[in-house]
Length: 323
Image 1 (cartoon, rainbow, N blue to C red):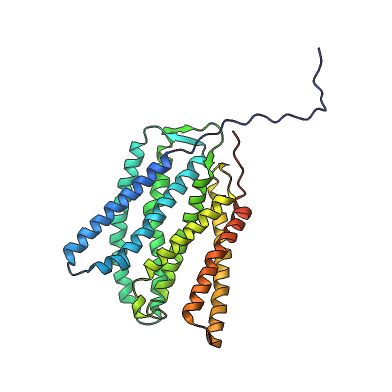
Image 2: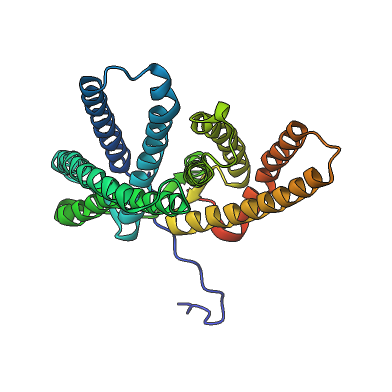
C-alpha cells in the first residue's frame, strides 16, 4: 500500500459549475420602463388638458429628449443594481417574484408623482428667490440638476434596494460562479458611458443656454446630444466587445463602473485639451469654425476606442469563464 507523496504539487479543487445570470434584473427593467411610460402618458394627458396650444416642436425639442435619457438611465441603473445585489449576496433568483415586481412598480409610480409635485413647488420657490436673468441662473441650473439626480435615486434606486432586501427571505441561494456573456457586459459598459455623457452634456447645455448658443440651436441641443450619444454607444460597445471574452466569470459591477469612470476621465481630459486647442486656433484665425468642430468631433469619436480598451484593461480585468 503506497502512501501519497507529501512533496507532490497540490491539485486544484474542481470549480463549481457555472450558472447563467438571473432573469429577475431583466424583469425589473421591464417594470421600470413600463411604469415610466405610464407616467409619461399621464403627463402628456395632463399637459394637453391644460395647454392645448403646445406645438409638436416643443415635444420633440424638450420633452422627448429628456424621456429618452430617463428611460436609458432608469433601465441601466435598475439592471445594474439588481445584478450587483444578487451577485454580492449569492442569490440565484426569487421565488414567486410577482409580489416584488408589483410592489416595485407601485412604489415607483407613487414616489415619482409625489416627488414630482414636491419638485414643482421647489422649482417655483427657487425661481422666485434666484435672479434667473443674472448670475444666479447658473447656480439654479446646477442646483436643479443635482435635485434631479437626487429624485432619481429616491424614486428608482432606493425602493428597489429596499424591496430586494425585504423580499430576501424568498430568495434562492446560488451554486457556482456566475457566467456572464461578454456582449451583455459590453452593452452595460457602453450604456453607462452614454448615460453619463447625456447627463453631463445636458448640464452643460443648461449652463450655457442663452450665452454661447445661437437662437437657431435653442431647444435642439438635446437631439444633437442624442445623435452623438448613439455614435458613442456604438463605438464604446464595439471596443468593449473586442476587449472582453465571449463568456466572463462574474458580473463585477463595481469593477465595471470603475472601468467606465476611467474611460470617461481619459475622454473628458482629451475633450478639454481639444477645446483649448480649438479656442487657440480660433483666436489665431484663418481656420473655419465648422471645420474645427467637425475635425475635433471626429477626433473625440476616434479616441473613444483606445480609451475604452484602456479603461477595461485597468479597471475591469475580465476573467474568462471556463466550463
